[in-house]
Image 1 (tube, rainbow, N blue to C red):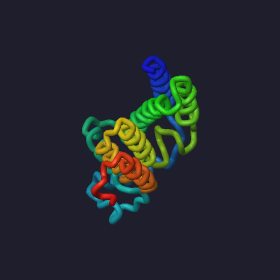
Image 2: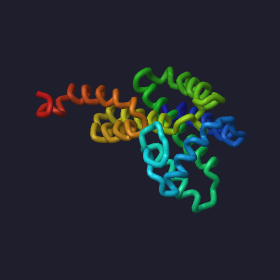
Image 3: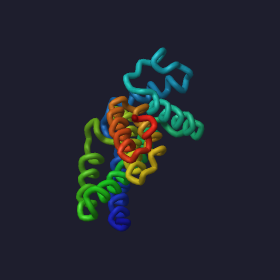
Length: 193
């Protein structure tokens, strides 16, 4: 597991770094970046700035841009590296969960499928300049939540599920599944009569 996962993450990192340096053509980054800059300048989200997603992804990006702007790093580079780090986390947790559910034999095919479909995709689904960072962060938080639920650490599973909902509302459906799973183990026997 460790050796194949190391190879997958290494290949992913090299391809991601090369693809991230070369750049990709995605005009939608300006929408996310303008919302983040508006938050930094003191505008109120949903009052002064039009945003269609929940606030957590915008606030995470605004805090990261605010911190790295002190080091004079461009916002586009910051956003690319946020996508790279999120994508590394998504690949790691997807490979970890695929080993749990599918076995070691399917680990490398799942990893290569992720790299070919997720990284080398020049459209709006690439992680460097995605259409929405909310979906990228939300998927990462959901995968972390599933990992905690498998290990029966439900308080952390609920925490990361809540963070995912604050990134994208559609992840609310996973909360229902998580509640039903914890109910199966009688963790809420006083709550559910």
